[in-house]
Amino acid sequence: MIGPLLRAGLEVLPDGVPRSAIPHVLGYERERVFGFRLIEYDDPRLVERLNEAWYDLATSSGLIDGNREFLLMLPRGTRTAEEDRRRRTMHVWHRVRLREEWDVMGAGAASFLGIRAGRPGFAMLALDNSVWLLADTYETGAAVYAVRDPAGSPGVLRALKWESEWLVGKDEDREFRREVDAWLESRSQR
Image 1 (spheres, rainbow, N blue to C red):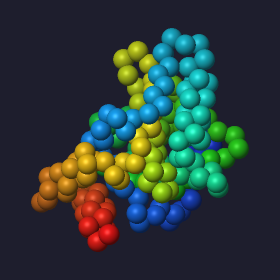
Image 2 (cartoon, one colour):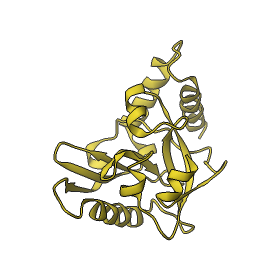
Image 3 (cartoon, rainbow, N blue to C red):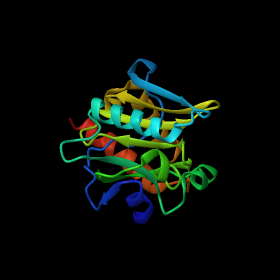
């Protein structure tokens, strides 16, 4: 996992994930989405324009902190995003630092961050939980967009509670359930 991420310009920082990091689930409200940029697949500068859109949104949204660090969601283990989608396994946050030279939508999407260059599929989180930044592939193009304050979203909270209840007694992903339960518990203690 380390080598492909380094080629994408992301340095993994071991044991650096804050305990307050919200587990990633779908369920956020549409009005929380901002900065949506779709680049058509037939654009001759697809990867370059996707990288530009990602960086512009990552910096303007506050995803990247002063040390160029943020959280990146990766499959548990060392599968690619395509293999992970087939297996329907849960993911885990990793703290990363953006290096000076990077290619998130090219080299990154060709490994763990997508299906292939220009076909991304990933989630990122600001260290303070203020924004999720997401990239995905669609029928006509690939897009990058941000979600404001996912930890304050009623829809995300409902989805986390549902995940916790649905995973009871299942072998799906006990570690993810523990993460969800711990996060929900910490929220109720505030």
